[in-house]
Image (cartoon, rainbow, N blue to C red; front, side, top):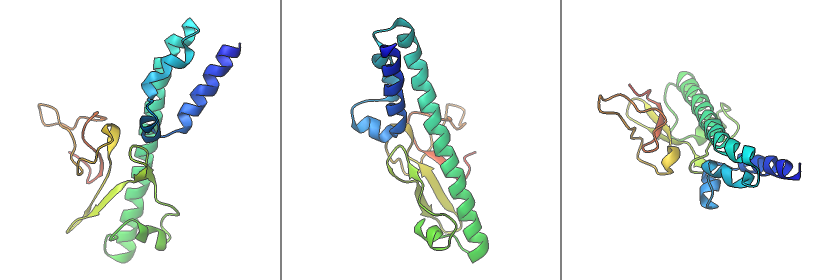
Length: 157
């Protein structure tokens, strides 16, 4: 039982860290098999738990992006212009804190454009690709691609 308890303690610690923190510590959510290597069943569960961890961070990132889009659009409705930067949303009372991008440990990237705005996460490649998304051979957006950014606004077509 000690090995199983140790596995779940280590798993809990992994889930507390952002993907950025895990990467900088030389670890990743795919390496879960190593924490249960003394027990066959835990070695089998490890990779699945790594996928669950990745999905958990993807969903958190999407939720943060959605909330920011709503706050930005609310600001536009109330002030007749988009904010110059995200800190204006705090000053206006639309949000309390800037949501962090778990793939950069910085706020989600926001850029005001002439008539709209751009909002994105740097995504799983941990690189700011300037809001560029990846498309397949047919020109369709590759959702959750390992390369490119995850753009929340404008909605990719």
